[in-house]
Length: 364
Ligand SMILES: C[S@@+](CC[C@H](N)C(=O)[O-])C[C@H]1O[C@@H](n2cnc3c(N)ncnc32)[C@H](O)[C@@H]1O
Image (cartoon, rainbow, N blue to C red; front, side, top):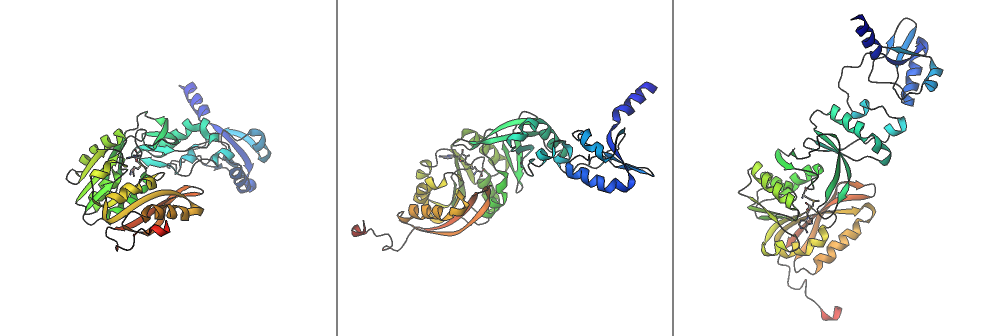
């Protein structure tokens, strides 16, 4: 029994630094600056000395210059760590590379890591799960690929099964982020569009698992919504989500190509075009099937060259036989340091003045 207690108390001891009390604060600040202080444990003191807990990674030869290395029982703070970073013990230069944000889709966390942190991905994933109890898995995002815009995900902690239910704007979306595209960053944007819809037929050209369609059904006043996608997994989840959110009366999901499929489905009064790397290529189809109404188009553009995207839109709309005005444009979120995801709102009128689009053979 005594032996076990001795073993436990030795086992619980960890490395620290003993310094004279008048040097305590200065040393504490220097250890923090070097990333050597273990801030998950409490600092101790007696009448003459302060005992500072050290991280495992704090090299003894570098800390010895401040005082004596000792082994003692440092009590851990009982509070829940605020950030997953508090649970990690990496070299200071690696700690600086840790991401400050990540996406959460239902019970799944999706994180991007720089090359230098890849070998620590398992500990990083574990630390994230420990600080966020609602999470079931952490997956490393190795990029979005192909026409379906699917993320290449590698589970680094938790369950190796990524189907989940994401709640957004009080709606429920079932999906597996390794099979379908879904961005949790568009919640406000979806609500913004939904609240503009006042009657008429809506076409969601790149519907995914249905977040725009179902937000419009819940928060707008559409007569009917048709959502299209080319990825069969999207349509499977979209149909499930229509049922989950009781939208069967308003929303229909179709498996099809947004270039051709809408041609027999029009006319529409609102068209949502959320294929940010390629929406503009489908603008001709949208203009063909829209009646009087609005097009909400998303595009990833160079921050210093938004004008070229506007030029592209203007060129495509010039000869469509309808009046098209870009009524507003704004950044939805940053895509990369030099690229933005932008929203272009367009108003379309089906009956322009007859002279407006008259083709003059002299002008070529
Ligand atoms: C960026 S995602 C947007 C999904 C959804 N609107 C959202 O907000 O989560 C684009 C979607 O377009 C689909 N897609 C790509 N090319 C398509 C095409 N030619 N016709 C229909 N859907 C297409 C992809 O499968 C993907 O689900």
